[in-house]
Length: 514
Image (cartoon, rainbow, N blue to C red; front, side, top):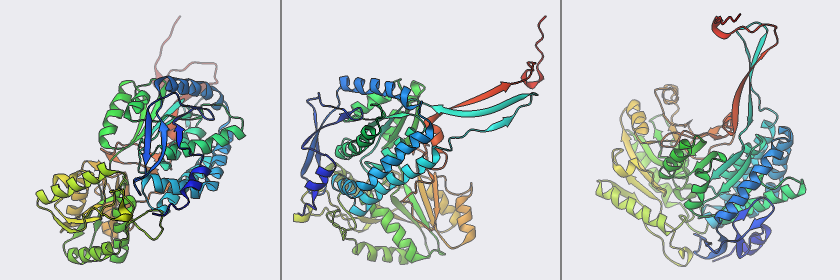
């Protein structure tokens, strides 16, 4: 199998055969004897090794962060924005190398890897402008000669727990906003993609060094869920942003809440596209196929259910089968391929178990499902995307399977379709394909989709950084990235100023003392 210049890519990103997994910014600590091995799902080969963070090094990082926060918060927000701008420029220089590493270590296509780095660049651009707009409001007081306003202040230490499917972008979404808000960041990446995080930290360390910034603004800790628990339980960490499974999120959310910390939870999605008789079917097929098989179905916004009107069901089904026959599966660094591997063999096993359950519940697999074998599929992580006829009530349909399985469901009335769309526990992304104004407006109204994202004539996957990203119900309710998501990285304060010679009380209360 071609290596696509991987040695040069690793050298460019300063990835060694054995790497420390703990950094306070410029400095790295490698006191651990425990090792993470990063195997590529592309070919099953060992890419490099990473030393796991020790408790001692964790404390060193936290204390460094505490000291850095006192300096960082004193720098004016536009100046902090300029640092983020410089980080974005570094990402532009390393876009091809970092995009390739994302593709090779995670398994998504090279174009998706580049797209993920572009998301990092975009959020930096967004954050730079935002650094001059961290504004509050002025309110009229009911009391004469009083002024009321509100303002926002930095929180302090922000912990970021990210998932393997977006090994760099989610960190950037959080860190870029947290930095311009005056916070410092501790990143605990997925243990399945540790090299991507080291590459990002190496890039940011150049910015820290070149601008004489203090250690502790951008820090990294590596390991499994046990390392994440240190963050979750640490009162010194004021905000935890956690991306991952609903199971993980329920644990993190509860523990952070117990200590009265703040959390952003970005959890599972079970996303549907409603296809009405008024849909542009060519557009529908493109949106549905990419949504279902992009990143091998391992996006939280992946399309998992296609709710099709009964009058066009057979037409849509046959078009999908024809489209799926054209999907090229293989090494994601080869730009001719559409779909790469699942992240590991555990994911493959979950894929197989899901297909068995579909059949056990009475569903019908109409395309795909094979585990691909041969020289080009040495890792054992390549699967053929699946189309399955099912019922929305099936237990397996109600769950999120992180794999390229698309369930085809029938409906007769639009209200029924919306009810089916909303009946799952997750509430992240949704879409409707229609040229009918009444249908689209109903879908977007409070009678329509109950998801955090609701689209018309585009798929469920591929959110832009300008809008707030997140979902409802078991998706966790958090919002990251665009719009006013910045507010969660700050503490809110209301101020009242009395410039009179009297002290009138609110609500006209009298409290006279002689």
